[in-house]
Length: 486
Ligand SMILES: Cc1cc2nc3c(=O)[nH]c(=O)nc-3n(C[C@H](O)[C@H](O)[C@H](O)COP(=O)(O)OP(=O)(O)OC[C@H]3O[C@@H](n4cnc5c(N)ncnc54)[C@H](O)[C@@H]3O)c2cc1C
Image 1: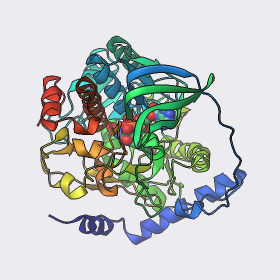
Image 2 (image 1 turned 135 degrees about the vertical axis):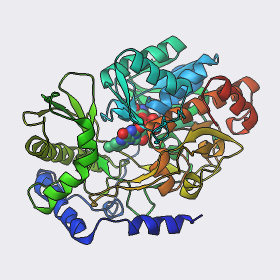
Image 3 (image 1 turned 180 degrees about the vertical axis):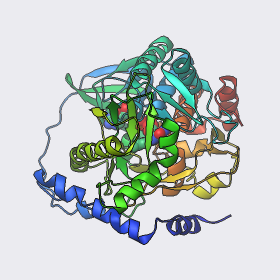
């Protein structure tokens, strides 16, 4: 089995040919052309953006109202956070879920990423790997005509998903608190004992026996002092895209299978001829259940957006909306059935594939992913390929597990190093940059969420630190909840 460096070399060797790559650099001129209204030029890498001098002011200390004391505080209501909160609450924990947006789902709703990957293997058989709470959500979508299993993915209507997730958390007894941002951890030595939050009511505190960081970015762990890397640690990271919904699609002539199988080629041809400034080739046009409306995942921002920097988020959102319009023009001109289509909505949030990766007790590697490694403390089964979207390159790079093989994610990758009282789930867990390209999709996110929710409940019941939860007990409980297949 190759090591991590070999893998990177192999990914590099799979690069698109040089001519196409140069075209992609031309496409990257998008930033200069359309970002001109913003004050500073878009930096190519995160590293290039970090040299501004800093000034400081002193904030006076103040007494903060204590809003709640709970067993489990979940920060972030994406697929990881929802699964974590529901799992903890179902096990009798008083659970509060804090979410920045006014709805749940994270990227699935806010970033309009409207198909679930990683719930099934990618063969014709499509073996289901994510059961438990994530599996329930998928089944409810399908049963309620708000979701459809198509090949190995599940296309869904984000409005249907929002309502299902609201219902799931409320039925489980979770208290949701929306429009609220995690501001800082409430620390006792090296242990997280709750959080300071900010919302329209100002700054408040929440005490919790266990905090579950499900922010996608590792906000809680980073602020608590757990070491982390951003992207590949050298300033590059997975590319981000601005998803959009396309209306007025003629469903009598549009063929999703045709698009899926041919988009790469058609876009590459269009770029080679210089007809369109497309910043990537391929992508997805997924079914949404709204007649004549499809969701589009393709409008790539062609530079390394560091989603922990507000100025990067701002600029990429502005550019992303303009890039989406260029893709819509291509689709209208070149894809049968889309001749009269138009953008009906761009996502509320730029889609971030990768920001921080927080260091935990085990760093999952791409060798372990592709080698289908099973850990003694494995808590989630994953078969999604290593799928790299590199800013400035037109074509994604994929490396697959064989057949229906899967690896597991060890509990230790969800336990942050050196800080107590907090566990993590979702796309920022302890793994290498290449492994992250596999485990980041929403099936494993849901599985990891359930795993940390159960672990938090077991820790509170036993009065122990979450990291001390016995792997055997955790695995047994997850299996009894239908969560872990493997
Ligand atoms: C363009 C793009 C396409 C993708 N395509 C697919 C795909 O087709 N299928 C698939 O399965 N996956 C896909 N992914 C990956 C997937 O969407 C994410 O990796 C996944 O959503 C991770 O789930 P999560 O719960 O860890 O994080 P998120 O979905 O990001 O959820 C995190 C939640 O935490 C909240 N939050 C963050 N910080 C704070 C804070 N400080 N205070 C309060 N709340 C906070 C956020 O608002 C959000 O709701 C794609 C990603 C992108 C960007």
